Length: 241
Image (cartoon, rainbow, N blue to C red; front, side):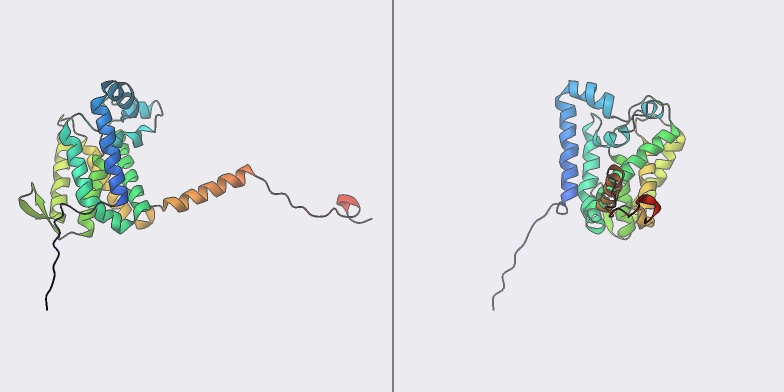
């Protein structure tokens, strides 16, 4: 009896739909920032980055969402974030499902921005990057697979739970030291904090379709009034003759 074996060489996990979309979107925006300097400065940086004072005093709350799709000019910034998304995102999306993974990504990114606002509400420094959401994905991976080994720098095997603990300690040290290294360490911690709360209390993760249907139903109820088509009473409103 003969046996036929097929071998397949794969680099990294297979891409899931949401992770693939996020990778394409982030890379496309980065290319727009890099290739078109006028687009980079006059539109993306000025109107889409998270500048705390513009939210605190100007009410430009859209920045809490748009900033996470921008990245700094350093190539390492986007490479690091997209590497985390590519390596750990597919399994988290598989566990949570597409809609809940989208909610997790957006909520942790917004939460990271809110934490930065809470610490420096009147800062004029621009914050960009998806790092808050990426650190939340890394935390989620460690919560679901705590004893799985990860290769740090592709060489040193470390369990996921220990890697996340070390990351939290380092981010806390940098945040408390007040070092000005151009990295939003508070945002990293904020993303992880929001991620932990969402996973610890799963009911906090909304089903986007369900929420949208409820909101749409409420809007239509406000917009349209339904009148009963009862036959007129004999004798008018006061009763029969």
